[in-house]
Amino acid sequence: MEKGLAVLCTALMLLPLLVAAPAAALDNQADGKVSIHCDFPGQVIEAGETATFTLSVTNNGKTDQMKMWTESFAGCRDWEMRYVDGKTEVNKVSISPGGSKSVTLEVETAADTSIGDYPVKARIGDGSIWLHVGISKTHTGELGTLELTVTDKDGEKVKGATVLIYEDKHAEPSDKVMTTADGKISTGLPQGIYDLVIEKAGYKGAEKKDVKVKCGITTDAGTVMLEKSPYAAEVNIKSPTITSPVGRNAIFELGLKNAGTGDDTYTLSTKDLPEGWYARYKESATASGDLSEIFLRAGEEKTLYLEAIPPYGSGTGDYTFQAFIGSSAGEYSDELTAKLRGSYEMRVSADRYRYETDMGGTVSFDLKVRNAGTAGALTGIGFEVMAPQGWSATVTPANITSLQPGDRETVKVTVAPPSNIVASDYKVSVKVISDQGEQEEEFRIVVKEQSFAAILGILLLVGIAGGVWYYFRKYQRR
Image 1 (cartoon, one colour):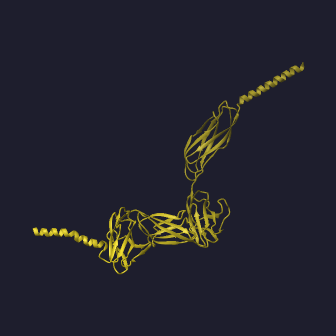
Image 2 (cartoon, rainbow, N blue to C red; image 1 turned 90 degrees about the horizontal axis):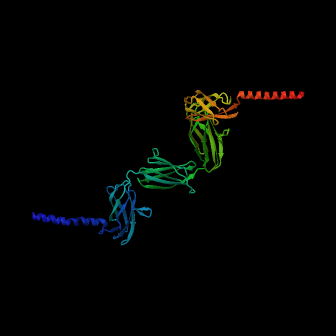
Image 3 (tube, rainbow, N blue to C red; image 1 turned 180 degrees about the horizontal axis):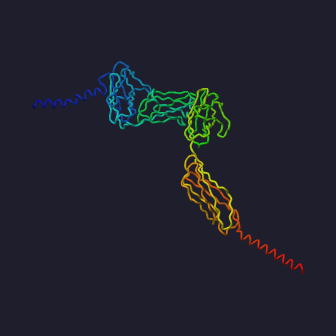
């Protein structure tokens, strides 16, 4: 029993030595032809970043050329590791016998690597060294950011270029973005490898393949240069959908630019017009003439107007058609939509707009309110009478709940001037207010003197005339 314990104790004492010896040999192969040393064999970075190790390699053998490679283990097999000389990837190194050289190893981690410590073995010739990369933060589940700059051959930024982003070239684009005024895009994407197709009217297309995007990391895909085409056009529709009331024409404003390097003539037409509709291009919104083609010099831009004219009696609805422009480089089309909607229109009228009354009298007249629109009922109709100070005014009925299209209602307006008012012409306004709009009408009220006052005046004049005649006759005889 005691003998067995002694053997066990001896084995336990020798175990650390047996483990340490191979580990030391693996670290730098001191007994081999190549020895490797690294001042900082452990680095801590975020997932997706690149750890750079500087290795000092000494050649203790007689052969100067040595192959370089790495070994990865569980958790980091999707990492990318490469030996580099500046920006050039290398896989062999030449070191004179007895000499030393500095070698750089880049370890590019995956952005979705979990937090933890990961070993990597670097091998050069028959030498090797264990390196360790600690991941302090992971970006699992986050979107990556793709950035790209688009310029022309003169280095000028290209605005409005379309960047189609494909993860699978045979499928639909994963994303579609436009360059800003500074020629740049910045968009979020899931981790993956993408192909980019860059297009813009007036330029030859370009591609950029195998762009790697990491989750949580910003990837700069660099700069893509586009070359101008000799013939091209840029067509910009200010608004492809125009809403107008029934009975009015829809007018679309569009910009046409010769984006090529040569002069060109452009044909102007439409396709797929609704039945009975007519469309014409004009140089201004109010012009009456038609345009069928236009000549533009290289770089010249022109604003045109496309008027869509519906047939008489067209009802409400959405009507679509194609604006079609032809050039030496090809044809351009855009879908346009004219939305015809009903309108709210209230009409107010009276039989007369001038009335007379005596001082202390009243004036009553009928006011007709009609819904002349097509959009729907006029609701919440009320009345407001503006008269001179001291006048009284009433409207019967005081309000109308609703008025359907085509319907008419009549209300009675009564106004009364004060009894001591001066005879003259006065203005009275009636404002009709609904939830959809309002309309105001003006009336002239002529206030006359009372009739007995006129008679009294006449009798007074007759009396004065009679008295003058009497005295004239009396004193004339004398």
